Image (cartoon, rainbow, N blue to C red; front, side):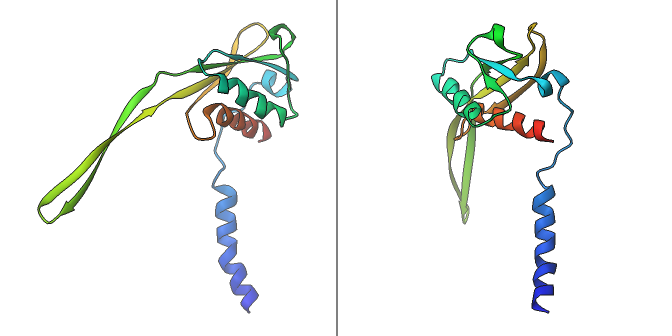
Length: 148
């Protein structure tokens, strides 16, 4: 009986966590699916973008990272988006007195464009900077899309 109750409690949790990450996504072009080699073109002003590209592809065996765009099936072009500042006001009320503070946060983004051998854009995605790095997030998102 205890096992049955445990199963009934855990089953909805397992189902929700299994299907929560699923999104309806447009299929990627065949040129991306069938490519074997990629060249990464870091057009940002940040060297750590190149470092993150290298780290992500070092552990991903689907594509070989090449050092010359003429040897690549795909060219991944990384650019930085415009930075902007976001302000946030936090308020606390105590009786009739409202006190608070405004904090500013600089928000940046990185865009990854996937080009074929002829320079035609096949796909593009952008992500805000994060602790892991927008570059790593972009590559991991591409991995996830390719695995569906």
